[in-house]
Every structure is written in structure tokens, then in C-alpha cells.
View 1 (cartoon, rainbow, N blue to C red):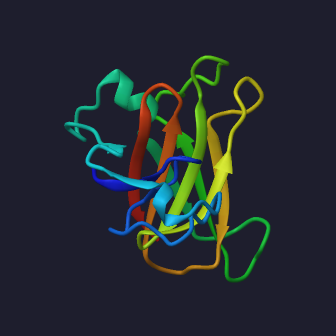
View 2 (cartoon, helix red, strand yellow; view 1 turned 135 degrees about the vertical axis):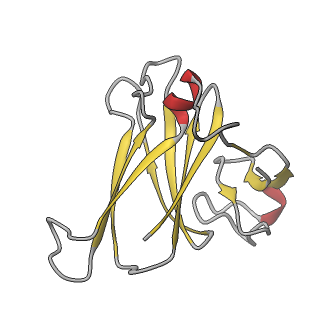
View 3 (cartoon, helix red, strand yellow; view 1 turned 180 degrees about the horizontal axis):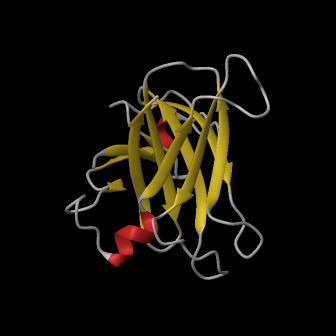
Length: 147
């Protein structure tokens, strides 16, 4: 899948244009390079390979929040149907979240200290939620769902 990739922090802009400044590291527009294969997608979503089962984010939208009782939707994400390793030489670097193709948040992960998962508390009530994770060895993988 095509996207503009920040050469400094790895953010993938998926709205069709490079931002004037990266919303994560604030690098200028010139730091973004358009790449045809910026994000990997499964070849057959109904029959994932073992590698795809470790990389495609699994997203769960919970309409009621346990922390903020009103006006909050929880989003839980784990890396893969089969848990992705978090070792010094192979790990998930970060998880990026987008609503309607606009970046909203990043969760940075540390190998050996964290599980390959994250959660957000959203104010948004509707829209397309996109999650992109970056594996240090196998690149960026995407999952999309409706809120």
C-alpha cells in the first residue's frame, strides 16, 4: 500500500499527501518520501500466513470505557493473531493510530520490557480507525475498522 514515509521517525502519511511537518517528530515535508510499498497488507485476508498472523494488528473497539464513563470509546490493539515477539533483535517499534486517514497518536514500544499491544481512549464517536504497526524487521502492517 502506498504512503508518504517520514525518513526520521517512520510515520506513514496515508491521506495522500506529505504533511508540512511530521506530527510525531516535526521533521519538514522534505523528510517524507512516497513509497509504493510503505505498508504491507495480507495477500489473502481469509487465509493469513504465519508471518501475517504475527504482524497484522488485531483491533477491538469497546464502546464503553472503564476510566472515562461518558464520551469515551476504548480501542485495544495487539500485534497479531499470534503474539509478535518483543526481543532485542525482533520487535514492534511503535503503533500509530489514525481516524479517517489523519494521524492522531503513537504508542512507542520497548523490546523485552513491553508486550506488543496498546490502547487509546477516543473522543471520536464515528469514523474509520486505522492502526499501523512497525516491526523492526518486517516493516509496517495495517488494520482498519469502523468506530
